[in-house]
Length: 158
Image (tube, rainbow, N blue to C red; front, side, top):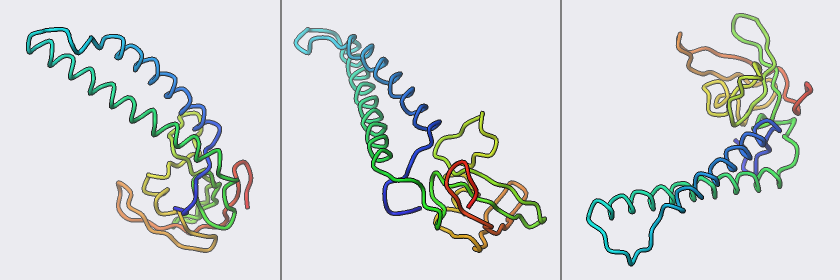
């Protein structure tokens, strides 16, 4: 993966905004149930309160993570056409001679059959490589290899 901030596809950006909205709504629901710390209660009440506070902390951490990722993506320029990174479109020739063009993304998208996530075996193998490089990766049927034919920006070839 490259050292700087990584761009996000519009689909990934929309998915993160949706998740952020859902998390904020959930956090509002959880915090609304948190009581006044000065109220007396039995141990079960206190344990329940602690569980809700822990859930609010978990939600806050995920919200902060998403907000940071969105800020980082806003600062990122277009994906490099020299080296494979998140957001790149990559043409690959597999061992059997077939070729495919894939898009490297952060989030899976059922509507994009050409999307390969950056944390998938092929995605991890491609990241950081350039046209002409050979990469090897594991599949459920064993190890395989591919050659990067070209690296381009989203929506185009090289």
